[in-house]
Image 1 (tube, helix red, strand yellow):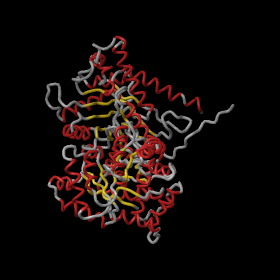
Image 2: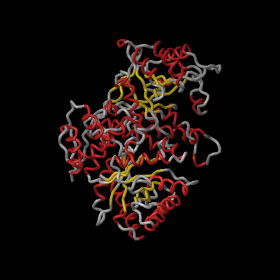
Image 3: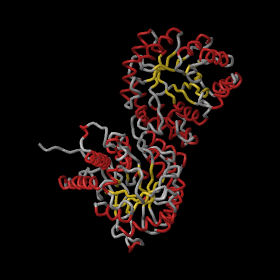
Image 4: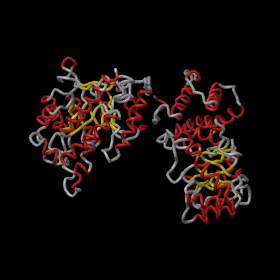
Length: 325
Length: 307
């Protein structure tokens, strides 16, 4: 008996955004990455187009991080003191993009200076041909000081600069506008605030195709269902035609998953939890894949094995297209 | 429209200050001003007053009844304080605001309403909170609120169901459902209970300058499905004007015709479309955008009018 599959026809689509610039475009990247462009909910290939598969970024730091899991420190131990080598290793591990998160303090415990931040970013750009996202340390004053210097020193590279938040976005947006970069806009798991921040940023004159939105999330078991619902709602609004929500979404499941007890703690947990490393990788992988299913265009991860698994799963989800066409 | 004036509310700094000083003149002026503006009753929300309810409630009743004759609505969860206030009432039949379907409140508050022959506002809220879906809210009224009123012998005409307005800023999915809850409640019982809502809740957490627009557009929509009573700001002149236009079917102005069309289309379960709007008129464009957020078709953001 033939079964009629009900299909949703969406009037809107997600914006297409390209990160990175080739030498011919004023940058130095060997390849660029394009995200967005969806005209259907995630992987609903029978309802519309998913022209650009979700991509995986690997997060690196400008120096050995103080608060990362020993499992991650062990994994990256040969490169962890040198952001350039770390970036190259991340590219070799299969990253589509690099996220460089600047630290508040340098190796000597002094505040990271703008010159040091620029040196780290330039070293990473030399070491990899992938597009780059640069996050400030997460304190308004330091973010502004470091990101402005980085932005000016890398004019034309189409970096994505973050993190813009409702309390601190003007300086970052202004420098991104002046130097041909993109920004990431983060809001705390709230559709109304996400949309409002996009409105505020675009009111400053930054074109919408240079804004990535980060609706934030929680890890598996730590509020991921809220993150999922917020992203799903934003994506539904985008497909319905609300232009202030039609931005590709970036989320940081690596950061979230490695905060969870299940990943962080290796001792004093029930034996039934099984092998620590395997559990931690599962936690990061499942967190990331859940978010990919809710519409994430860029997931930022930390462990190379998670990257491999998430990329393989995305490939399968994209291959499902051939089953319906 | 029967407006229960909302302005004596502890959330206002002025009210808080005046209450601390037991400034009778302040409350009397605010009461008179609301009644002169058309309020048919006055809501008194002084907070829970756990410590001094038995002194404050009688004081506010005496103060306000010295200058107005309208019913007073005791908006509190403090049953002891409410009872102390009810004993002082000498004028119109008062209102208790409110009970819900939570077992403890549903047990006590209707008995108080019966004992003092008051009207009773009953919220469609149960143990597990406020349901989103219209039908679930109506079911709370049918399964808990109305049966309990009948059980304690409260006349159905003294029961007022409040299906609960929530803010478009954060609880947007509730906004269209509330419209349908009001529609359905009118068929939920014979004779149907009265229905009232707290209109201004729809714009809680919205920047002050946008609140009146959201309130009056929602009011037009709710009047479309037959709302005849609400707790609202009687001093909001544009809100009163919108109510008048719809009640008198005044088609003399373009914006008035738009509000009427909105009410009519909501009544007839028809879609409000761009054809209904003159996009050269900024006021109509603002109303259109507001309809879109209230029907949950476009995600609310504080800057929604600038989009």
